[in-house]
Structure formats: C-alpha cells, structure tokens
Length: 272
Image (cartoon, rainbow, N blue to C red; front, side, top):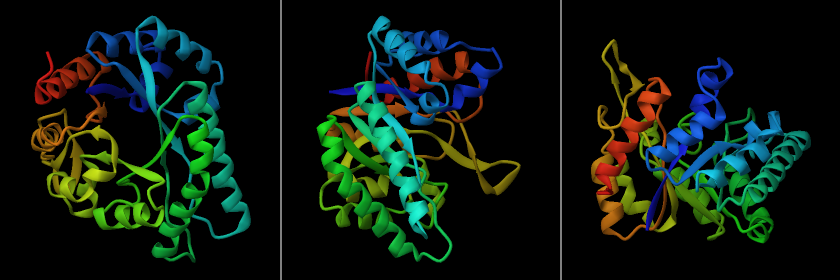
C-alpha cells in the first residue's frame, strides 16, 4: 500500500513569519489526504519543544512521521569532522526513535577539500553501515538520496549505487524524482536501475527557468519537466508499498500549494 507524506522544511519561513502555525500545517496536510509528515531533525534540535508538540499533533490528526531527514555530513578530512558527522547522525537517530519513525534519511553530505569523491562516497557508506545495527535497534531503516546540493558526490545513479553497493544491503535509497536533473539524468530512466534499493520517494517538479533556460526552477507538480506521472505509474506497476513524500518547492503559499500538489499526486497514484 502506498501512503503519502508531506515534507515540511519549506514552510519554516511561513511559520516564523506568523503566516502559519504548526497546528495549521498538520491539519492542512491531513485535510489533503496525507497520512504522514517528513521533517528535518534540525527542527527538533533547534527547538526541543517541537518534539512533544508534534507527537500530539500527529496523534490528534491520525498521522505519523515515517521519515525524518537527518542533516549531517559524513565526509571528513580530519578526526574532528568525522566525529561531528557521527555525533549528528546518532543524535538524529535518537530523534527518529522518539517520534516513532520508520526511515532515517541521512542527507547533507558534501565534498571536503583534500578528499577524493570516491573516498568520500566510501566514508558515507562505511559510516552508515557501521551504524546500521544502532538504527535497526531503533526500528529504523537507513537511507540516502540522490542529493542535488552535491551533484558530483551523491546525485547520479552510478554514485548512489556505488554507496549502496559498498554498504552491502545495510542502506536503502530515498528516490528523489527531481534531483537527478542536477546530474543530467532522468528519474524515469534511473528507476529500473535503482528500484530494488528504494525505501521511499520524494516527489517534486523542476523545469528550465523561462527567464534563464540554463538554470532549473521549481514548479508546482505537473507543471515542470520531471516525468513524475511515468515514474509513479511504474512504481505502482512494480508493486511499490511504502511512503511517497510531496516536496513542494515552487514557493506558493502553503494553503494553495499543499492541497493542489496533493491532489495532483493522488491523481497520479489513482487515489480517491
């Protein structure tokens, strides 16, 4: 069975400005048919009072937080950088466990001066594999994604697969439908290559910026160039069962973007 979640990091600014409350956000997602939320662990690190608040809001609205995005860089050039990455990872795993999550999506990796990209990918794989027993003890699956802020490190299919292979089955893939564009690739072509590793999806839409065709721009779902309909249809055909998270990046007001994009996503998945 496929369930839909909504990623929340893009609405922090709306909340900070008083345009939206956390209660409003959760209710808006639930009303649109989402069964879960996907937040950054840093939200709860920066403001610990959000942990009990979100436990209550999720319970009150019949929702869960199946995936949390753990932001850390597991690439290191010295012992201090290595320890910092590990400390952030372990802290994030504790937050996942506190919120009853299923998947710890470990993102934020970036190149470090003096470290080759191959060595960097090995560092990510080895550190995650070493922490797989800790994650399992907390009921968690570890995941990486095709991460477009680091297009030369961990965005192409080949680079993600290199990490997954090195980790020997201890790490899965959060398949982001839009981020492959940063590596000059397409999600519909990469899905068959990577399907057996997928634990969840991020669904977003990018296209060429009309004002500067050499640049990408985020669009509402269905308005850009990401072949989301084809990717999701193929995932359904293959029998995917799990979470697909809406990632609305077009900058529209949340009260417009969330219902509209959820309706589009549910349409692709043929959900009522």
